Amino acid sequence: MRAEQYWRQALAVSERALAARALVPLATEVVEQPALAPFQLRRLLSRTPKHLRAGGPKPNPFLPWEPALEVARPRPGHVLLLNKFPVQPGHVLLITDHWAPQAGWLDAHDWAAAACIARDTGGLWFFNSCAAAGASQPHRHLQLLPRAAGEASCPLAATFLQLLGEQGPPAAGPFPWAFQLSRRTDHELHSDLPGLYAAHMELLQLGVPGRDRQPLEPYNVLFDDQWFLTVRRTREHAAGFSINALGFAGFLLQTEHSDLAWLGQHGPWALLQAVAAPPVQCFHGCESAA
Image (tube, rainbow, N blue to C red):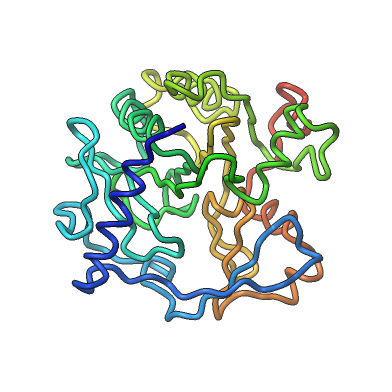
């Protein structure tokens, strides 16, 4: 069992940050739409935050970061912060304490810091490589939604396990976009993360770290203890929905701009297809061929 000290610390810091008005939780409600299952649709009740508006904020909020949001410093070079605009309590960001571009390669130091957190606190990790993949800030940051032991990391977790052959044939798949899904081989020490990342980058024709200056196309990475998923992207918006990595985990957020009629007619899989690159080739039997 994990100690979950980082998660506990995040919740404790959240209480203090709320009292100091440094934290601005977003009010949402679940929209009951059985036809969208297994996706979860939430309606945003708060005013749309700046990072979801066109253009987004210009100043870098991480240099300097708000001291009231700091949770821990897991390794030299990285800081664990609260997400200032969380939908879930304890939503944290793992940032570099120095300038590093979100659009650059994730490196060994980033993965070592993520592994340090993951050994203590589990959940759904995700990364948006740039604005076209849903990133709201240009400063390097991974995100974690903590989960308790035995709790599903996201609505599509069972589908990913089905695609990996653990629970029979998948209900939906192969997906009609460029993606790579791999089984985690080390969910205790998390030493497999940099290798999976490098392999997915090459297989999805996103480039090769060390050879290419930066990734060649936008992409999202999502992972938990059991699977590691990368999706190649083309754009951030479709049908009035802002789609970051969480969309490919099964979480959709409805704002005042969202076209619910389009979503009802075409469905969530078509929404994701509209923002992802078409398949590039069939890799391990999970991806659809071009």
